[in-house]
Image 1 (tube, rainbow, N blue to C red):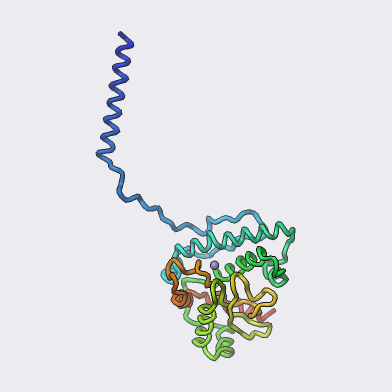
Image 2 (image 1 turned 90 degrees about the vertical axis):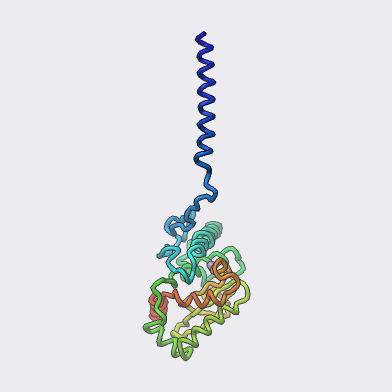
Length: 254
Ligand code: MN
């Protein structure tokens, strides 16, 4: 008799829970549109593997350069591409068992046949400059010694801008456009393929980089697709001329 009651109770509880779960489904249907989690993270959360060179902090939020450079592009660029160059550079250095004096010193004395080191040391250094180059509080024109040197060496700021934009637009495939200075402070503009840069031996453009423009598709494709020209135009709206001028004046003192 006791067993029969227990079985009856279990069946009742079972039926009750089934009806409850049906009720839940009827009254609270699953939302048709899944709630979208924010895709934009925090650059400070990006962590490199332990290694010789540290990630350079971005210094601003991923969306700081909107609408000129979109947040998603900045996030993928910094947290995936740049992180990859940094980790792979450290891996290459560890395999060689070397302890470079600095990234600049490593690049100037680079074995150009060591492709993993060349690509990743370039990728690390070039992006460090690029992040520093950018700001949301852009001023239209450079100041200080750089402003004077641009007029002296290119004729006008507009002439320089056209030359820099052309260098980026005409670089076939992936690469970088550069404003560099020689030891005497004379400026020139040019481009390099892949992750090469003007510090490496035997480049067509040589000197101390002052301004770096990334023209890899990963730098603009999400927002600008094939319109590299539009991205380059937008780049001029987010240049940090204080940093670029400071870099030029520092190069002059050396
Ligand atoms: Mn890049």
